[in-house]
Each structure stands twice: as C-alpha cells, then as structure tokens.
Amino acid sequence: MLRKRGNFPTADFVAPDGSRKTITIWCSNDYLGMGQHPKVLQAMHTALEEVGAGAGGTRNISGTTHYHVELERELADLHGKEAALTFTSGYVSNDTTLSTLAKILPNVVLISDALNHNSMIEGIRRSGAEKKIFRHNDVAHLEEILQSIDPSRPKVIAFEGVYSMDGDFGPTEAICDLAEKYGALTYIDEVHAVGMYGPRGSGVAGRDGTMSRIDIVEGTLGKAIGVMGGYITAKAEIVDAIRSYAPGFIFSTSLAPVICAGAIASIRHLKESDAEREGQQAAAAKLKRMLKESGLPVIESPSHIVPVMVGEPTCCKAVSDALLRDYDIYVQPINYPTVPRGTERLRFTPGPLHTDAMMQKLVGALNELWKYHALRRAA
Image (cartoon, rainbow, N blue to C red; front, side, top):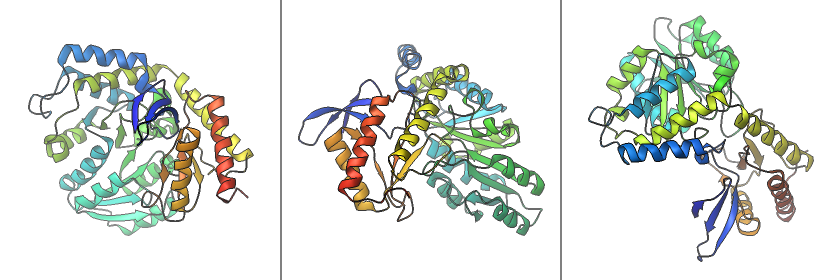
C-alpha cells in the first residue's frame, strides 16, 4: 500500500512484509500534480482552521458554507454557464444527473456513446428511460438513431470529452450539429479534460469552441483539480431542477469545506496558468515517442493518456507486479470489465512532474519485461 505521498509523482510504498521503498507513480489521475500544489494546500489549511473538518450535514440541512457557494460560482464561470451544482464524486454526479433527467423529462430517450463511463451507463440504466447506444464516436450512426425517434420526444445525447481507456476525444462539434438539427439536449462528461484542455482548462468543448452549445457539462474535482468531488454546470433552471429532484444530491452529506477550498484554489490557479497543461502535454508526447521508438505497442492517442497494449489479463497483471517489485514503478493493470477481453493494457498518465530520467527508467523496464514475457511488439 502507499504509506504517504512524497514529492509527487513519488511515494513511499509499504510491502506486505513491512519493507518500505520509494516508488514512482505512473497511473495517478492527479494529472497536473495539483493535489500537492502550495496554493491548494494553504487554502485547505486555512479552511480547516476557519470551519473545521466536515460539512455537518446535507446541502439542505446545514451543509452549505460560503466555500460551497464560491466553488459553484467558480465552476459555472469556468464553463461559461449560469450555474453549477457539486456532488460527492464524479461518479455520483453522472449517475444522479442522468437518472434524474428521466424524472423531469417524461418520455425522454437517452442516447449514449458505446464507450461511455460506467457512471453514465448506470445512471441511464437506473433512469428507466428508453436508451439507445451509438457506436463509439460514430456520428453517422448517431444520426440514424436520431432519425428513428419521434421528433416530439425529448432526447439527450450523452458522450465524453476524453475517453479514459483509449485516450481519444469526443467529436463535440459534430454531435452539437446533430443535436441542434434533431432537437436534442447535449450532456458531456469532461472528467478527463477539466483543467487540461481549452481556455483556462475548461475542457475539450472549450478547446473546440462548442461550450456554449453544450447543455450540461459534467466534471470532477478528483483528477486534474487535485482533490475530490463532482459537479454539473448548465443553465440555472436545469441546475435547479437537478438540485430539487436528485436523491444523490438531496440525501448525501455535502463535500467538506476544506475540499471546496482546495478546489477553488486549484481552479483559480489553472484558469490563469498554462504551465501545468503545457508540461503535461510535453511529457505525454515525449513518453509516446520513447515507447514507439522502442517498438512497444503504444496506442496512438491524441490526448495525455498513454495506453500500452498487453492483450492478456494474467500477463498484464504479471507485468504490473514486476514493475512494482523489481523496478519501483507503480502502474495498475487494466483488465476486463474496464476494457474488453483481449485489449488488456497498462495505462500511463505522464504529467508535468515526471522527469526524463523517470521516463527512461520506465521504458527500459518495459523493454526488459516485454522480452522476458515474449510479448508482442508494435508492427
């Protein structure tokens, strides 16, 4: 287990036998290292002294502080929307919002990309609404589905900005064009894009210039922002409707004020600083190039996510175990059901704090393990 965070991306690791060593983390979703940023830590220390550790209740029963209000204002401003609503996690924000939409949009059809995250799939399933699934990023198939639906029925297209396992982008402009043509609402999950893409870190829709055309933007505070929690942003009436009818919001203890304070500091910093984003993109590009030059089967993704294919679950776990045991490198194997059988992989998330020496050590270790296990290399 990880005993404590050190100078991220390193950490102290305690093995089952009690021995300790320093390892390099290659699979953290704290993409920009903001969980260790001095501004974030200072803001959280200040909030802890001011208001204590916990919120003390649900948002409707004593659990709303000025930190919650300020955070939602910052999030709405980040995405250019009228209002925002925070949840205890990105999973809860997706599950709760999508399942609640069916309550407030009678006879709605929820149309989902085939590779949407489990939180979106569960929210759609729990909604009880009719669902239709379009092939991943296939806008022609999406249009076929839209054409087949009675024009009078409400429709919601749910998709992602960055798909976390393959690292590809959702085609926001093409989907918005179809949504406007067929009278559908748009719902984008920007969990793996917030803080990292677009002006001020607003996400892929911000980068593409389509943010104003998206009806509901969902995101997380637990990845590039560096703390925890989830949220949605939209027009005020949409946010008020979810606030009023969503059990996952109404009956959950609210985020601790210290968490909100850290998120506020992180978002404000990333609105003004491009250094972290530029560092991350440079690190991702460099690692992809090094892996490719070594003949390792890296998936050509356009984003910061760097998947390396193994293709067999037992071996994928064995490589992951050996990296930690023999090379002090921590990366988790990604097996079924997170990815389809036969596409098992190691998923690396290089960031601005990963050094050239760390990358050289990683690629060298992978080359040795690929040879030892006789794994397939890139064509």
